[in-house]
Length: 190
Image (cartoon, rainbow, N blue to C red; front, side):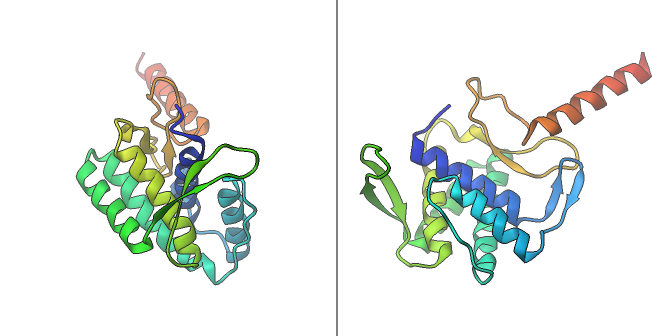
C-alpha cells in the first residue's frame, strides 16, 4: 500500500520518530531512551529515510522528543478506534507547526507536494511534514493502516503498507514471539 512517495516517507519518519524518541517497551523488553549520542545517530537514520541527509544536534533532541510524543498520541488514538481524537491531535500539530504546502521537484522526481513548517526549528521542519502525512492518511479510508504493536510487552508503532492491511505487529520479531507463545500454549494444553 503506497499513499505517494513523499507521504510514505514522512509517515514512516513519523513512526520512526515515535519509536526512537518515546520510552516504553520494544519486542518484549523495556525500551529506555538511548543516550544522547546514540539518539542523534538514530534520529539521523530515521529522518534520512526521506532522502535528505540530516544532522541532528544534541540541542535538537528535546524538540524531536516533543514532536514524537505528540505523534505517538495520534497512533494510540487510531489504535483505540478514536479517529476524532487522532484528527484533533493532527490538527493541533498542523496549527502549531503552521504547515504549508509547497510544490517541489528534486532528485529527478516529478513535481510533488512537500509540507514545511513556518519556522526553521527541527520541530517545525519535521513536525509539519509528519503531521501532514498523517493528516493525508487519517483523512482517507486508510487510517487503520496506522497502529501500535499488539504483541505483549511492545508499544512500538507501525505503518501498515501491506496489500491486505492486516498488520498487527511492529516487526516480524514481535509477530514470531506471539506465534511461538501461542504454539507453546497449545502444546501445554494438548
